[in-house]
Amino acid sequence: MSRGLKLLSLALLVTLAACGKDDDGGRPPLGGALEGSWVTVGYGYTVRFEGDEVDLYELTAVSCLPLADGDVEEDGTAPDLALRFTREGEALVIENGQTFHVTAQRAPLPEVCTGTKPPKKDPR
Image (cartoon, rainbow, N blue to C red; front, top):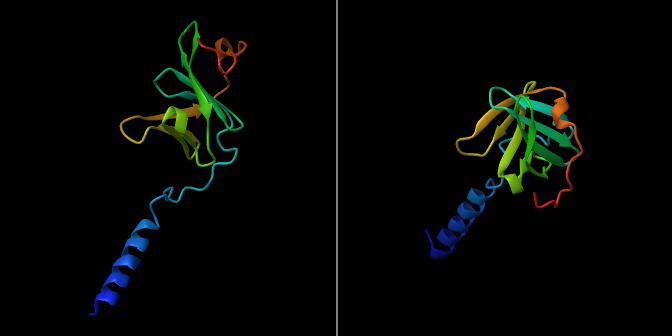
């Protein structure tokens, strides 16, 4: 095999190998599938999606503490939170790509969480 043909073969191999690097695992865009409120199963968290924003709360018997908020991309990733939100049937799945894997069920936002939300840039 000539040197030129070997280099061409190598270039094609590298190009083809790189083609699937940003593959999302075949998951379709979520659109509005996450919209609304969710309560985790056994972890005491509430998640609320409004448009392309997500709010996470820690839920106790007497309080609803804001944990984090951020933007959610069309594929369910929230880069600022290092989380990915997907659907498995009727359940919401929350993952960080490593060890965190929590499911949630659709539920109304608990009344204790319905107070006025602080502004996004609030230093609290």
